[in-house]
Image (cartoon, rainbow, N blue to C red):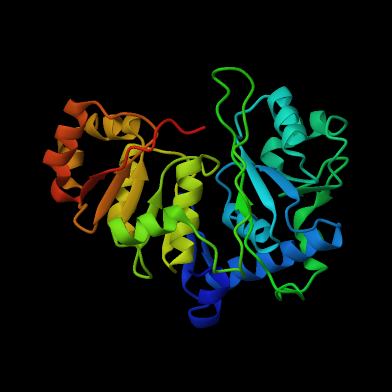
Length: 313
């Protein structure tokens, strides 16, 4: 099992992330360098393996680099919905015991409201600008070298929260994997490799918010095998088809609502869409109505694979 640094050493200029709307490319070398800098920032702030960081971002170009920075530092990391209220954010930050919090200017109003509501947070960083109480993410990272930590690195681990439909959201905490970075178990990576053929030639289209369990873990899995992740800032059915065709996407994970919206496109738009590059499309998060599934299989044929993972947070 690998991680971005593996491919930064062998294919440094290969796109690790491509933003669907802007076309911005973040290479494996760039993801790895930023993750290394951020891991050093965490260590300099006193965070040790097993400590916790929370972040609340839109589908930002640096989302995956931040995830990997926490992972490289051996931390638990909680990605929070960018649609949460300030009260909900404060609850999760406190409940998970976060010692660091990262957000963006997109959330600046709530970041200000949170300032005096997270006493356990010692490191506060903001991308794309700053507000009182937060340090600038870019300049903070620039003070550290882009090289790996001066220690044997272990794996970090996500700790995501339920939607709270039966009360307060609940964090699902599993043990930090044992072994050195790149040696830990990752069930989604195993699934993606064995069932869906994920590998270095994979071009994975992620149309959903990255803070959800399936998008976060599938994107991380694709980076473990050296593929490219195409991130949609927001889902749009026509844009989805355009991205499949433009980037020759091979793999994607959607929710049934996205199938429904794709099927509502005009017949001529669907007929014109070239989806022949797709090898696997996984639907998760909720049951898919049988009539919707039947229509998608009729349209896309054998590329459709079903993986029902229950309702994610």
